[in-house]
Length: 338
Image (cartoon, rainbow, N blue to C red; front, side, top):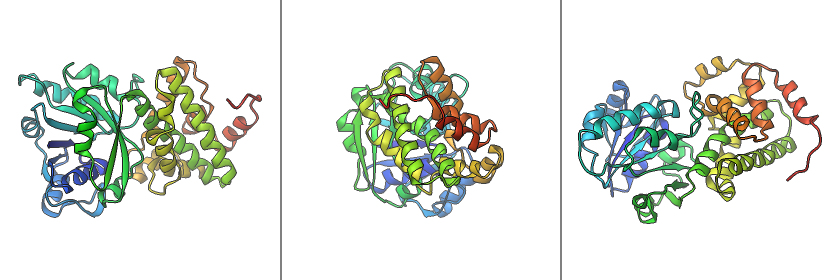
């Protein structure tokens, strides 16, 4: 398969290297930062976003987007969008503008970002559907996955969700490899919901751990977070069973407890009283949970979803003391568990 990964951050670099390592695909990694691409071309190391890890020798690199899109516009080609959700609409518009110059069925598009667009409260598939031609096959690839581990060929399992026949089980089989097992789903909104909401819950878990509230508190927080996620699923028309799978509970376990989690790190730092801007500057990477928490809360209001944990995270991001938010969560009126 002819694959182009658009976005040379940590996750884009890792997934591109994983697909290239099978030697079954021709994979090109595009990045907008010429110095990052130059370093990759010379050393095969993305020192800025994925330091000290050598990527697969067969992986190719390019900082010319038009050239990459021109080489990947056939129906059996694949474009993997590895930008944060804040950049998803822009890259889709660039692809759409390029596709207008070609005829026939465009290349399939898969995105990796997890979140909700901050101003519109739209999920990624709604952005892609609005910006790309209707005959563009698309889907989301998501699940519990730290880029560092994937780049090091450590085992990982993901889910590809799509309604398009072109991205069916046979397609998934082509992408799977000895390091990366991919499952198929048609529940696009459920997969996206899990990926977006778990980041917010991971911030909450980080705050809890940072305040040293104990294992009991963490277990209660994550369990009630899953209940909150299922309420979102019911309201948004997702399959609640998806929440129990890799892209819901699976991704939440990883992101809320793993030391490589940026969102958990944000929570740990918020617990110390640091401001979000200072935390973001120190991280040097996007923490999607901090960017989409308020959008998730807005969705909760729009769909009448009870989301006290999301609301609490937003309050802390806005400067309310974590201890005060925790007290408010604990003294709420009693309700039934289910």
